[in-house]
Image (cartoon, rainbow, N blue to C red):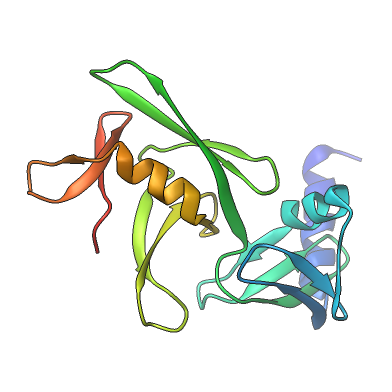
Length: 170
């Protein structure tokens, strides 16, 4: 079977997949739960994370060729747990690591955004990962990042990475 035929079959199968509600929740601290019990196997969390998608309405889905299920995400699906400053003094490159071991450099494709928390009471820092998925910066990482902050041309406090200034103020 030609490669294009395989792709057509896969997309046809995906269209026929009924949407479900999975009893999976990602807590605000990045822990994953199934039917109320924590999923403790990192490999399983990474597997689920690899098929996690967010639609235009902001709903989260686990999508495979045979299943599509909505899940609950209390804040952001991932947490930034570590941060490293690389590059040069003149052109720094900031790299972040998530709770599932994903490494992302802060750049135009992976921006740092100050967004309202789910309760709307405060502004929090989030890193754009892929396909609309976000990682919330843990408090220690945010404080470490704040220590490296400088005043930008617009007068806001922020950090430089990959030649781009990212404000740390909302």
